[in-house]
Image 1 (cartoon, rainbow, N blue to C red):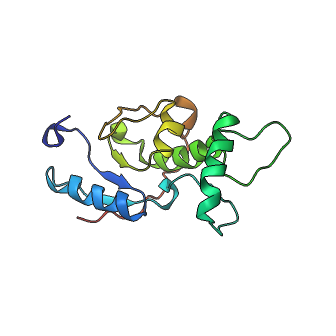
Image 2 (cartoon, rainbow, N blue to C red; image 1 turned 135 degrees about the vertical axis):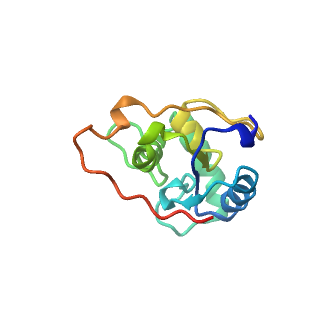
Length: 149
């Protein structure tokens, strides 16, 4: 995809440093505004926010063994992928007006949680917001954060 030829009107980015750096670089060629959305952050391997780096690999392995979501009736220490998907869809639904063409710069677990498929290095995945994530036609417009240029 050539960015200069994109129909996107905005770039959305996770607040995490690597995503912001990538989004800032991407925004320059087509001169698109950039908005930071907190809920586009990466999957949380530790819901206590104490983040023991040695436990991250264990949490990732456990999440993988569970197919991305907690087993029925259990609450584990990591964020289930269904919750990642819900929070990201809540963000994207605010940008679904006017054809909804945006570029989203996020993370290696967030994107597959949303799209249902792994992301290759440097790959872009076209994605269409599912109907159930779109706000009803009669709902008031949602406020998105201001974009910067």
